[in-house]
Length: 134
View 1 (cartoon, rainbow, N blue to C red):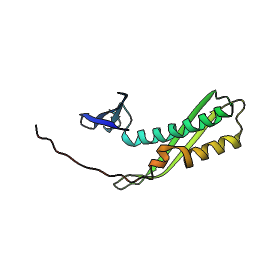
View 2: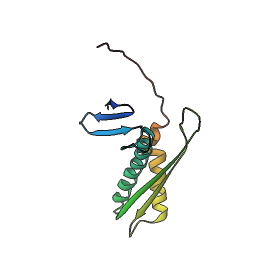
View 3: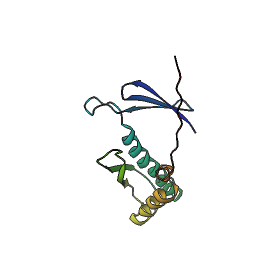
View 4: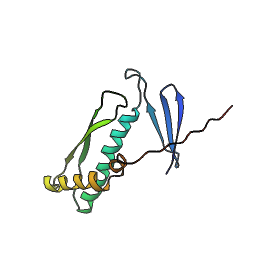
């Protein structure tokens, strides 16, 4: 899996995957920001990743989903690096036949076992650099 992220302007980037799907990443000041920042995208990715797993589990049990909303809150360290010290995903489902206990179990399995984004938050990150001359 690979993405290529290109700077378009100061603090504005476009990231493209191997299928040419694009996402804008915007770290400009909040009052001029038009897209999610990198850390907001991380929260969005975590919420969506968990929700996808939950929805798959519930649909396998033939449960109906009318509406599914994920509220993901992150608390960050004040000093640099401003990493997340806590993240809370609040999953809210509207369904005529999903029970609280099975929803709780699906959410736990998702975030503790199946969600690639949640598991990736535990991974080691490496890097390399290259300078090209014009």
